[in-house]
Amino acid sequence: MVFQDIIEEKQESVIFIDNDKTVKKMFNPLYAPIIKILREGYRTFKEIKEEYTKHASTLPPDKTLYRHLTTLKEAGLIMEIGKRVYKGQSMTEKLFSRTAKFFHTGTKIKDQEYKDRIEKQSKILAKFLILTYDIQKNSAECIEKLLNKVHSCDIQGIDKLFRDFPDEVAEIAGNLPHDELQGVVDEYIRLNTLLNFPELKEELKKCLGID
Image 1 (cartoon, rainbow, N blue to C red):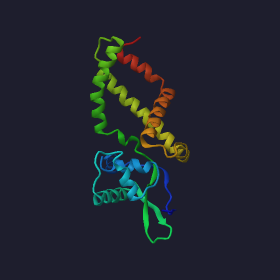
Image 2: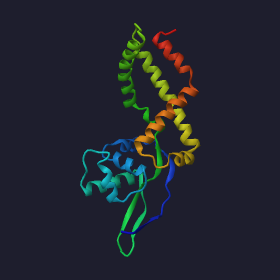
Image 3: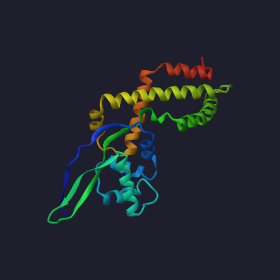
Image 4: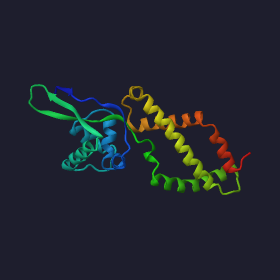
């Protein structure tokens, strides 16, 4: 069936999100599949429905899926970017898109949930490092403080990338699938932190009592 997609709205390169409710919607397992699907480009409702189970275990009924789209539209995360017109027919379909290629939450990740997770991880990481380096001391508290500092450095680096070069980032990343893009961003954060905060290595060695 021959069709033409008519784009009527412009997608932003990057939108910075600092609203807790909106951040929670982004990571809500009901809505996250839609956010991931639309990361790779605009879609019709039918296409979203077809791809939904790639990112979720179950597919909601059509009415529920429509409600999910409405909720994300009201939150400013997705929009109707245009319509699909079929040749020789009066039928059209709405085209849904993310409002931006990238949603950047910045320091909103540094909430109580993150701090609780770091506290638990630090105890395990300390034991792993003690095994690896044969260190006879409890370094969990020190590692927890260091991880929070590292996270702060990570945020600084990724904030600068998205704030200073939003259009360039969107062009370079293209329509990479969500998981691939996240992997690239994670590695960028790691390399950027190594380049700009070499003193963190010395702080870790001090934590572990390594000369």
